[in-house]
Length: 239
Image (cartoon, rainbow, N blue to C red; front, side, top):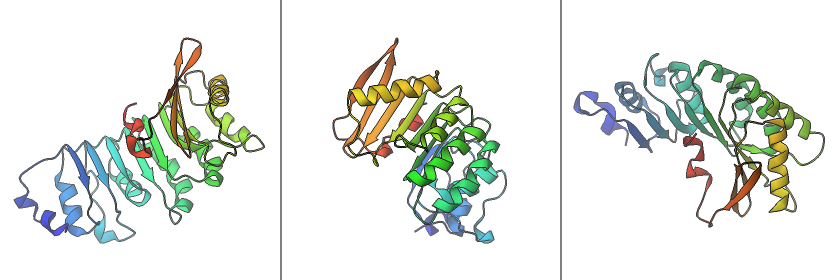
């Protein structure tokens, strides 16, 4: 269906926001290259390693918000440096490439929010310290698997020590049994703030939804969801 976009001479508009459910082909590339005012982009596909399907350097010069698979993010980050909010969706095949991609985020000097969906616990232990080392000025990070108490916890909390501008952290406790609730979450939020004093919001994702804890003075207030929220609710866009 991307053929409808291929003749850019017949596309008389410049979008500022686009959610495009097309596969990445040459027509799709031509269309993106023509969109010089695009600020927000959601896509479902990427260019693979086909040089014929690469965007020209300097494409998407005003892009600020990108939501897509890792393959797409890898390529778009290589052609534009204007991105401030980035969400990446992983699948099992793309997991091995994430660690190689994270250092490339250093190109994005204005990046303030990073969200990674479907990040596994074993990869999160390695990815979060790398994120902290590469993007220490982030204000929002998610969704990081919160390590169970044990040896891996040190890597998580050590990474927090270097994130002096972090205001919101989304963590997943899907691997915890039982799931932390109520006072346990409050304790965990307080512990996170010991290592990262700039934190004002901690969002816990459990098997049953999310709970947002907001710092109120020296205490935490509790804001459970009503069952309608998903990881696509875009807390990452708000920071």
